[in-house]
Length: 290
Image (cartoon, rainbow, N blue to C red; front, side, top):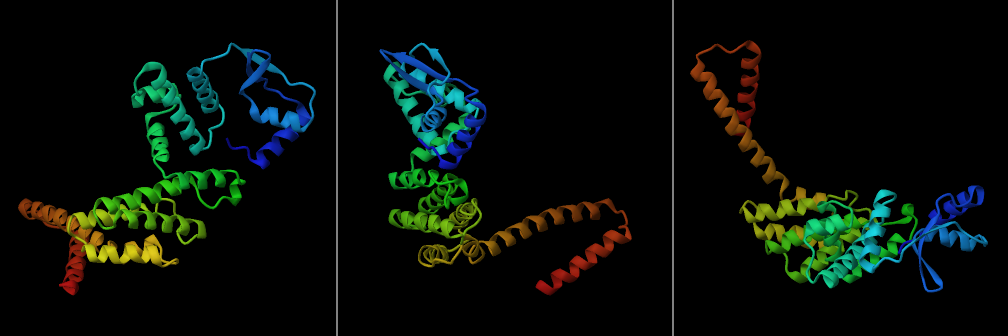
């Protein structure tokens, strides 16, 4: 589905200098040949006005086997872009259901597509994206990589982060869409430059769920994320959850330290000077806080 101009030009130069080194894989149906593997080589050959190309002729496969072969070939050579791969996986699943009369299990689909179950789950998340995001990503994939402003992973992370807040009722369904759009726009403009930054929204949602963060405070920072173009997720996290998580870590460390100190007391052994000095310094720091 995606044929980048830069990639094709590089392949044209290679074919001009060395010819087509790897034959195209085709099958014959009637008087016509259909490409199973090698469309980029074919496009370059047409553009270079080559009189002929080397081919390997395979028996005509059924559609299910055809798609399985496509996955196997590309997984062994160069990975497809995620979104076109997801769409092809959807087609593979439909043809399996048509021929077998049932939906394939995740493990079966992974085996058919020559990929891991984790990869299948990730691609299925892509298929769950609204069509407007699919169209946006396909349009983005047509650009040379240095010119792309948004990636599949960024859209997935934005979607997962917004969903986490909606599930905890921090945002409504409508606000979830607005938040996702805002995060994607901030990725494009560079306000958010860390792909996994939206994961902090899940931590914000968990803080609300544990009653550690007031819902009103959570809603306030989310509204800023939606309405203020320069307000980042890192800032929202700092304005809401960072202090709470810091104090949570302090409590855990304090509890563990108390257990260790109790063991020292029970042992009746004298502390060495280094340990004693460290504990005195800790006592002075605690006295300043309390």
